[in-house]
Length: 243
Image 1 (cartoon, one colour):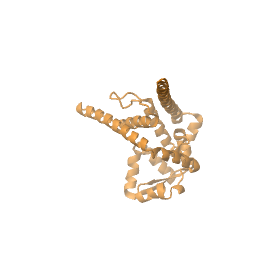
Image 2 (tube, rainbow, N blue to C red):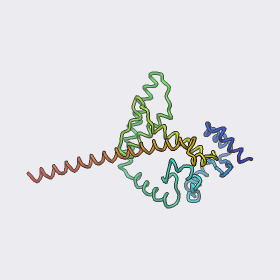
Image 3 (spheres, rainbow, N blue to C red):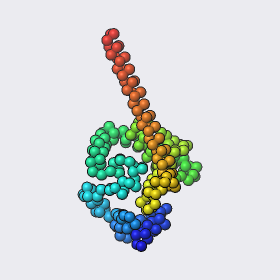
Image 4 (cartoon, helix red, strand yellow):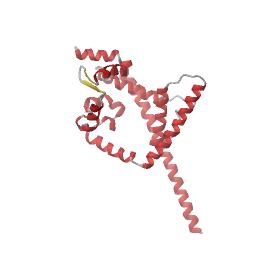
């Protein structure tokens, strides 16, 4: 009964999940929540967080249960795998982020979008408008990541804040996969492709389409740059030869 009681309590507090967890963590630091088919541990104690995420990281794999919950959204990415798959992706990522060129470029991009965000907030303040800071930070993060990762400007942080299907689909998918942690019927819904799982499929399709379009634009941009460099080099060599 205690297990189902914990599940019911989480469902009741789902819309205020972070506040609900903080209420417990502020008193206990670390809490263990038994669920019908698994157990969740929430940690706020700094020493325990370091123990799990750094000192003894290898002893705390994500595991098959977590992987099954997040697979639809995260696939076989670094945030959803363990062992050799994780190590390979971690090694690749560490090389990329250690690059001075990437750090310098990222700094310029983040500064550029910080100024755009500041301009939007200043305009809203001047006109006494209410803004959703979470949405603005989401737009800033999305624009920044696409610019740094693919060299593509998608413009969701434009002054008119254009509608962005990807952001809505990502939020929807994130909510649904998180609900899997406390919804014992999610696998049945997935098998029948009904309810939240049907909505998840539609959201993932939007995310995939957007992601592939950004990758395609990035590749086209680099191909264009490559052709331009080759043309200029060809013209330079031809000029040098003629002279």
